[in-house]
Length: 252
Image (cartoon, rainbow, N blue to C red):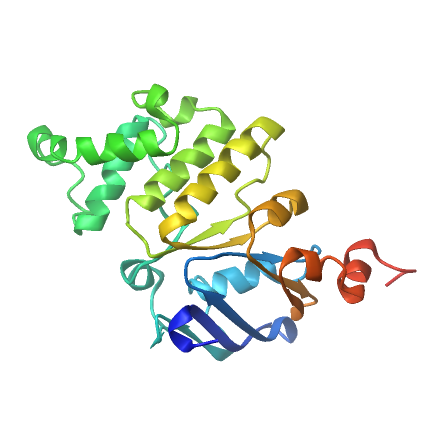
């Protein structure tokens, strides 16, 4: 694989917590313009790995490169500015603001005006067309003026994605986007992720295997903090070690 095809690369990624190794020597390469899923049984280290990639946790060992640049040790905010944004970073932090206003706040952050929330309405109004465009893009046009707190759960997920898109990231990291969603919402959010991924890269941690099978180009399976298998779903799902990790044999 040519290096220019790789947008995010982790080498030897390790995280220890007081002697417990949660992530051990993980190598991960995410190709540009793909949907890449990180899966594994509970306790496999998926969330820890995710937190390392966005530097919400600092690795004990290993390096992370984004677009060929070593981002190991950078702050989460600096990494977001480079174009690597994580969905919950700017989720609906203002429950009593409307959907449109929440997206508008996210657009301000993109402009670097994060501490000027209370600017004049005329200045903020200039951001409305783009805010409404993003609101529409995630299927929330009918909810634009609804307070975020009143949104049904699945629609809150869509708002999270809209506020992340406001940062215009080159790559989005989604942490269990389907968690807690009903079947109808799962279909809607899956379709939204597919749309979002048309001109960017998506890495997601996900438990829902049918979603992973349907959406992902590449799947990395973690078990006990190590990479167990990697490849397309058809290959990975038949891998004996993966079947064993998920189904379990004996008392494993």
